[in-house]
Image 1: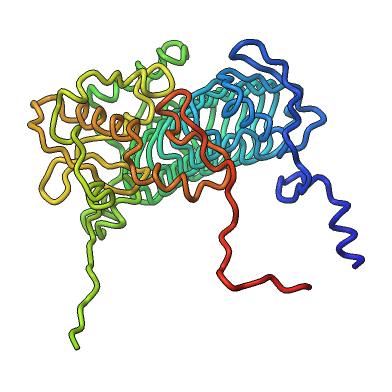
Image 2: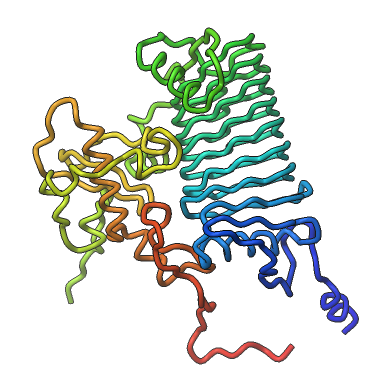
Length: 263
Length: 143
């Protein structure tokens, strides 16, 4: 009985795991198809409930979240075309599992931002932690600062653009997609990658297993110039291209069902 | 008594899941008007950049990642337009709600979400009243 009484007292878990009494706060100021709300006194689940209520039930297409306070797991599971602005930093697993939104984060993000993203655009105006854009399948992730280790681990599509430096094991087990890294990169770049393309403008500490320099072609130039243009990133620097050497793994040897996992 | 091996099918395509073929797989005119850039977030093709014309069972096909199945294309594809038409067929398929992954949402979505995802504005919400399934005849214990 004592334990049960204890559980009943729980009203908030910073990880968003246990929040039994969360209701939609409905505190937003709504103006036409735009809305804004202050997240300072809201829990993770309340913030996400408010976002979904606005986007799915109120016909709102442009939301600004004030004072996100680096809370974890904000803006996850948004499955519609919309614009979201977080006016501050996010904690870990921010903006994961999204399909469609265009998100702007005016601050830093913790690890695993944008993980498993299907489509959309996320622009992070400062630094991002490790595992940024883990396992993304599509969409664009732009980090204007630096990123930690294993950016784009298990990446299955999409484009990751980092204006600053990237940590170790960047592009680890990358399977498809593109990474455009404008700064220096730590050791183990593209380790065990299956496919995909990594462009690096700075120095590479060391290449990972089966990551080799690639041959530059016109489509590489078109991609770099287009992405720099659409996101107003200025004149692109000169890049080196890295691809999979195809010595470690080859899709031709995989079963059809395994092949589908990366399409 | 006869014994039959269960059907084993490795290559699952959209027609197999739906039990029928769709008109836009056979008529290019039904997909020509799709605006790909308008259909995707951001100022360029976004996620469609990774979608290319592939082949399944010897037939041109595009992969629908939302149902883990290939959508075969039966109309003649002009040279140089392979990826463009594959993308247009896929977007038409997703917007129509015929993708098996979208059909599963009505039954299994556990939280409110637009049925047609990011491809159709103002799509109806599903998952608003999901209840965990109950095993017939089973009651939870008192403690």
